[in-house]
Amino acid sequence: MSNNTFRKKLKSGNKPKGGPRKSIFSWIEEKLDVTGILGEGVPVQLVPPVGFVALLALVYIWSNHRAENMVRKIEKAQQEVEDLRADVTTLEAEYMLSSMQSEVAKRVAEQGIFELNQPPIKIEVEN
Image (cartoon, rainbow, N blue to C red; front, side):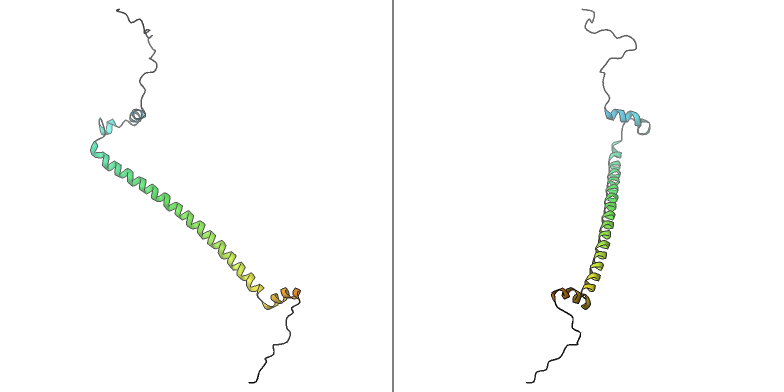
């Protein structure tokens, strides 16, 4: 058996199908081409500082996100307070108007109770 009879010979220009696939990391490394800057790999002594800076960046982004959410909540609460304050002012004005003697007299006139036109009389009792 000197010949390989199982495989067909490839014509020139054809590439084998299903060759080794590139992983995402090799694709990123190929696109970034950091070998010119860093050499043949990432120096181990750079990993902790870069990791720390990445952590600080994440904390900064999270902090800004929380601050913006807090500002939105505060503005919403202030708007609700203003609305409630306006409602309270309106209700107080209606209450003050409805508790006036003339308004009370109008409401109880339906029940046959009328407002006095004469001043009250003081009754004195002798001991």
